Length: 263
Ligand SMILES: [Fe+2]
Figure (cartoon, rainbow, N blue to C red):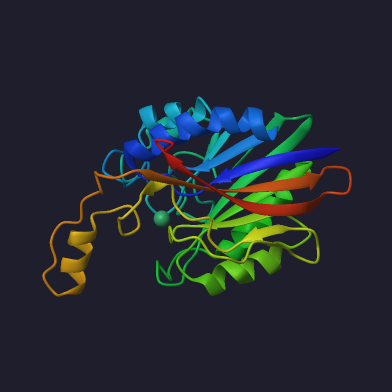
């Protein structure tokens, strides 16, 4: 049974949410998508965290959301009652939400997990590799036909290592967080579709979705508060993954880029 999945990279701010809401329904129809997963950890109006309203808006067109290091920057209590959101599985215990979730789509049971890298982020955090092993084991036990792991990390090396670590056990391993797309989408030898970073869905002409003047001031030694970029079209960045559910292998991965509003 063939199965097609869309994964959308870090959605930045309200403009990013609007782009996802505007683009995804047409893609579902046009590409025959069975499932849509979106990283929403920068979707709050200020670009840090996710609000319940933002989550609802994204989930009106997506099946499931993943998060990252900013998961709780804009609150997040709603995660206690929203099963369609995964925040990093390797955060300290006691926080709302869960590290993986499962749902049915296109005739398959799809498990989605989120883990947070440590390199250049927080070396004291629990191992994302052990957390991914646990999550994959639990999703398999719960009857997942297909598994996606979003590895939200700064270092390309850590994400590549995670891809090989999960090759053949997760069918999709996608990297997020750095907001800049990499050109290495591939199917690994064990049948795992992999990309080091999907790239963001945020304003073109920005620095990772934020005001470029603010970032330039930071790097020129005149740091000031870094605000979200507010002008220009939004670049929507995603990957489309084709999968064979019976043999539990990805058969292809391709990048998909759109501009919003469409020109
Ligand atoms: Fe992040």
